[in-house]
Amino acid sequence: MVSFRPSTSALTGTLSVALLVVLAIMPSFVAAHGRMTNPPTRYRKDATDPVEGNYPINGQVSRTMMSGTDPFICGGVTKEGSSVPVTEVNAGSIGLEYTVTAGHKGEAYFSISRDEESFANITEPFQAELGTHTIQGNIPDSYKGPAVIRWYWAADLTAPEIYVSCSDVLVK
Ligand SMILES: *[C@@H]1O[C@H](CO)[C@@H](O)[C@H](O)[C@H]1NC(C)=O
Image (tube, protein in one colour):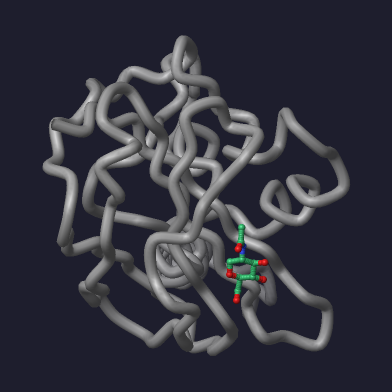
């Protein structure tokens, strides 16, 4: 007798293919978009997954960043709430690294602040490019001491997506 019920192995095969498709899509989602990669940025201590831990690579969360004011300046990740140690950097010329994993262009720049309220730009605005790149910046001597370096990127999409990330530094 011919049965039209799929065999268990055929079902398992279908599920495996579905799982492979999900796995193939996932990394690009998780790594999606862009953030500062050096100096290292804040990462939420209480995060349950990497997307949550490092807000700025998550498109949905990043969009909410700009609807708020101060709490979203650094993507809602505070210095106290971050597990990433402070990085020592020297005043003057500095190489600032970012990584973009989605091919949207759009203007980006780096800035610095002591209080996370008033920021001074430390690079010229530039067009973000796919991949990992280093941009030359300049930290004024007046920022010696604890400071925050911030990356800002307005990804050029039909609906604008803003990505920010902050790094806690000690300027020497
Ligand atoms: C920093 O540069 C951006 C991009 O050109 C500009 O929109 C912003 O006003 C600048 N911020 C300051 C504090 O000058």
